[in-house]
Length: 372
View (cartoon, rainbow, N blue to C red):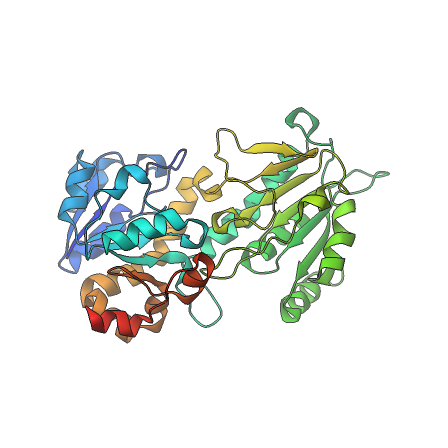
C-alpha cells in the first residue's frame, strides 16, 4: 500500500500524523511511505529523519493525495484539501463528523473511506482518543487557571488560594478520561473540585481515589444549575463517541455565574457542551459572553506537539498497520475495534451515532462493504 502524510493546514496545528519511527514500521512491512516536506517540524522531526527511515519526502502535498491509497493525518480535512480526496481513498485521522454536516457531505460525495480515530472503541474505551483526552484534560485546567488571572480577563483568582483565603471552585462536567485528567490536575493545583457525571461507577472511582476530597454529583439539570453559580472554572468534558455533545450549559446559566469566571469546553470538537460555545484557535483562544470567558480551542493538544504527536502515533500505528497489511475490507471484518472507527464507506455513512447526529441515512458497515 502507498501511505502518505501531509502537513496539517489547520491554524496553529503543529502535530503530524506519522513519525519517522511509524514510517519505518510501514516500510518494514513492505509499504511505500510519502511525507510532505516540513510536516514533522512542528513536532520536532526533520525531513532527514524521514528520509533515513526510507520515506519519499516531497514538497507537493497534492502529489501525495494523488498517489497514496491511505492518508494519515491528525485533524479533519479542510476545504483546500477537499478536491484532492479520491474515491476509495482511506482517510485515517480525527474526523469529528458530528460537528460538521458540510464536511461529512463532502466526504460522502468523494466516496472515500473515513476511519475516525475518535470512534475506534475497545470495550468501553476509545484508545486512539485517550492519549489526546488525557492531554486536553490536563491542559484545560492549566489554561483555565491562566485565564482566571485578571490581566487575561478573568476574575483574578488563584486555584489553590493561600492560607486565609478560599480555594477556587472547579466544576467538571464529565468524569471520563478528559474529566478525570482535569480532576487530577485541579486537585494537584489545590482547587476545590466538583465532578458531575451520569455514570455512578465513574463517580465512585473518583470518590474512592480522592477519599472524599472532591465532590461528586449525578448529572441532572438541578445539580448543574446549583453548581455553576459558585464555579470559578468550568471544564466541559462530555463525550459520546461519534455523537454531538449535549448542551448542558444553557445561555441562561451564564447570568447566574460570577463575572470573570471561565468555561473551557473540551467538547468543542463535537459541537461543545455549552450553548454559547464556538470554536477558537490558539492565537485568539477566548471570547466573552455575558461576562464569562470561553476557551474553546478545537485542537488543544496541538499546543504541545512534541508530547502529543508521540502519544497519538503510539496509539494509531497499531490500527494503521492492520489497514495496510490486511487491506481495509478484510481488516474491518476481522477487527471489531477497527470496524467501529469506519464512519464512511464509499458514499455511505456507516456510524450510527454520526448519522443520527446529522440526520443522515445510516448503512451498517457490513452492508456497505458488501455493496462495493
